[in-house]
Image (cartoon, rainbow, N blue to C red):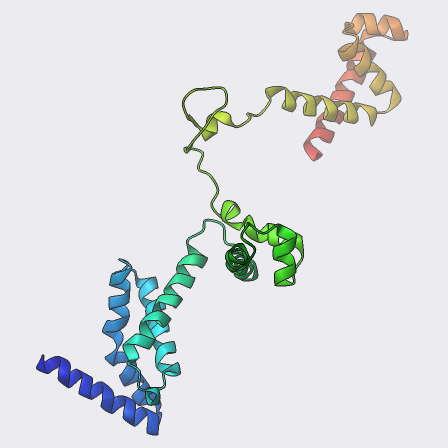
Length: 250
C-alpha cells in the first residue's frame, strides 16, 4: 500500500514537472514508470511474452504519454489503456491474415462495416452495395472488394472439411479440387511437335510425314520418293537433329 502510494506520488510529480517543462529525460522516465501498465494490457489479451506485441504495446504507451493532458484531471491509466489496446488491435488486424491486403483496403473495409451497421439501424434493413457506396462516397466495386477482404485474406485449408452435395458427410477440400489432366501434356507436346515440323525444309518435312505420320518404312518411303533407302536414312537423321535442336531451344 505504501509502495503504491509512493509510486502514485512519483508519477504525479513527474507529470507536473513534464507539463511545466517537457524534456526528453522526463518523457523517458514517464514511459519507464508506466511500462508495467503496457504489459498488464498484454496480459489482459493473453499475449504476454510475445516480443513483437510488447513493442507494439510500448509504442501505444509512448503515444499515450505524448497525447495525455494532466490538466484535464483524468487518470493517465484511463487514457493510456484504450490507446495501447487500439495499437494492439490494429497490429493484430493487419498481421493475423495469411494474405495482407493494402492498408487503404483494410481501412475501407472497416468503414464499410461501420457504415453497414449504421444504415441497418437507420433504415431497418441490410443496405445494398450501391447505398453503402453512396454513403461512403466511393464506387460500388470498391465496396464489393472491401466486403470480400475477409474471405480473400483467409484462404481455406486443403485439409479443411466442407459440405458435399454428393455425399452425406463432409469431405476434405483437396478431394473436391480438379486434378491435372494427363492428356494435356500430350496435347501440348503434339502441338509443339507439329509447329517444329512445319518449320523444316520441304524435303525434310516430307520425310517426317512419310515415316511418322503415314508409318512407312524407310524402304517404302524411298520407293515413294524415287530415291535410295540410304538417302532417306540421311534425310530422316538430319530432320530429327533439326527437330531436337528446335525443341531444346523452345
